[in-house]
Amino acid sequence: MNVIEVKELSRNYGKLVAVDRVSFQVMQGEIFGFLGPNGAGKTTTINMLCTLLKPTGGEATICGFNVLTERKQVRRCIGLVFQDSALDEYLTAEQNLRFHAYAYNIPKETREERITEVLGLVNLSDRRRSRVRTFSGGMRRRLEIARGLLHRPRVLFLDEPTIGLDPQTRRTIWDFVLQLRRQQNLTIFLTTHYMDEAEYCDRISVIDSGHIIALDTPEKLKDSLGGDVVTLVAEDNNSAVQELRERFNLSPEIQDGHITFSIPQGEIFLPRLIKNFTSPLTSVGIHRPTLDDVFLKLTGRAIRDTEAGEKEQLKEMMQWRRGR
Amino acid sequence: MADVIRGTWVIAYRELLRFFSEHTRTFSSFFMPLIFLAIFGAGFQNLIPNLAPGIDFLKFVYPGIIAMTVLQSSIFSGISIVWDREFGFLKEILVAPLGRSGIVLGKVVGAAAVALMQGIIMLLLAPIIGVALTPMIVGELIGIIIVIAVSLSGLGVLIASRMRSQQGFQVVIQVVIFPLMFLSGVFFPVNNVPTWMAVIAKINPVTYGVDATRKIVLGEELSAASGIMGNTALGVTLFGHTMTIVEDAALVLFIGAILLTLAIWSFSRQE
Image (tube, rainbow over the protein chains, first blue to last red):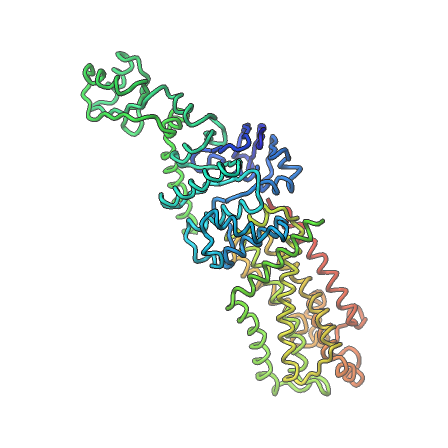
C-alpha cells in the first residue's frame, strides 16, 4: 500500500517555481530519499507534505489523507525532524518530549512510558533531565528523532537529518534510522544532499531545480550509467576526447579538466586503452559509479559544483546584508 | 474544538514552564515595577501635594503601577512567538495537530497568568503604601488584572505574529508601550490635562484599565474625595459620562476581543 501519494505537486513563490509538477509514491516500510543540491526544492516539498506550506498546484495524500483538506489527520500520522533544530533549549529533554506528548494528545497512561522508551531508543536516557542547551548537535538531532517518534507516526520525515554533524555522529544517526525501519516497519521520507547517505535509501528520487529527473533504487540508478566510470587527464584533453570518440566509439565529457566516460568492465578495458592510446596521458583513474556520477550524467554538472555556487551566492548575500 | 482547547492549555503550560525556568527573567520582571514605585515614591512624593484629601501621590500612582506592570508583562509576552520563530520551535508548534487559534489563545492565557502573578506580587506592597486591602478588593483586582492582561496580550501577539526578529519586536514594543503607559492616567489624572492629551488618553484602552484598578484599590477614599472635589477630578469621563468600574472593564474587554480576533487572524494567515 502507498503511504505517500503525490500527483503533479507544484509550488511557486511569485514567479519562481520551487517545485514543478512532481509525482511519486512511497510504499509502507520504505526508506525514500530526495536527493539534490540545496535549493532544488527538497524542503519545499517536505513542507507541503507536512501541511506547513500550501501547494499551488497538484495534490498529495499521506496515509490516505489530503494534505490540503485534511491537515489535522495528516499531522497526526506523521513525525517530523526539521533541518534546523526545533527544540526548546531552555527546557529539559523530558520537558520537550512531554510538551510533544500533550500536543499530540498521547493518553496519560502511556505518556511517561513512551517518553522512557524513545529516550532509550536514541540512547539519551541518562540525559533525561538535562537542559537541551547543554546537548551537542548529535544529541539534539537524536532527541528530535525521539520526539518525532513519540506519537507513533506511520511516516517519519527527516529533512537533512545529518547536516552539520561529524561523520561518526552521522553514522550513529543512520544506524538508528535503519534500526527503526527494521523494528517498526516505519516509512521514512528523507532529504539529503550527501551522496553517500542516499545509498542507504530503498529508492531515490533525484531532484534538480524543482523537477524529479530520476527515480529508482540506488543500484539501478548507478547501473543506468552503463558500467564503471573512467577518469582521464591528458596533456591535451580536447584531442584525447576526439580520439576516444573516433577510435573507441565512446561519448566522454570534460568536467573540471577531467575527461570522464562510463564503460562496462572498466578494469579489463583500461589496459587495452592505455596500450593503444596515442594522445599522451598524465593520469588515469577508475571507480564504481556513485550517485554523484548519476547526478553528473543527468544534469551535466556535479552536485558539489551546485553547492559551491550556492555558497558563493550566500556569501554575496551576507556581504550585501552587512553592507546595508 | 477539542484541538483548540488542548492547544490553549499546552501552549500556556509551556509559557509558564519557560517563565519559571529562566530565573533571571522571573527575578527581573518582578523588580522592574518595584523600581518604578520606589523612584516615583521617593522622587515625587514630597514634591507633589496631595491630589485629594487622604490621597497622596504615592497612593494615587500605586494602582496605576499595578496596571502598568500588567500592561508591560502582557504586551511583552508576544516576544516568545518571535523567539520561537527565530529558534525554530514555532515549527514544532505549527506542525502539531493544534488549532492556530488555540496557539494564540494559549499564548494569551500564559501571558495573562504571568501578568497576574506579577500583579499579585505588587499587591504585597499595599501596607507599605498605606492602602488597606480587603478580600473583596483583592478579588476584584484579580478580575480587572485578568481583563487587562488578556486584552493587551492580544496586542502583543498581534504585533509578534509577523515579526521575524527579537530586536525588531523590542523596538516596536517600546514605541507602542510608551504612549500606552504615559498617556493612560498612571502618573496624572487625565481629566486635568490639555485637550489634545486628553483625547489621546481617552482613545487609549489602558486608561480605562488604570481607572478601574484605581477605583478598586482606592474605592472609599476616592469617593470621599469626589464628594469634596466633584465627581470627575480623579476619574475618567467619556462624552461627559463618568466611567464606572464595570464600564471600564467592559470597554477594555471589548477592545481586547478585537485585538485578539486580529491576532488570531494574522497568526493563522501565515504559512
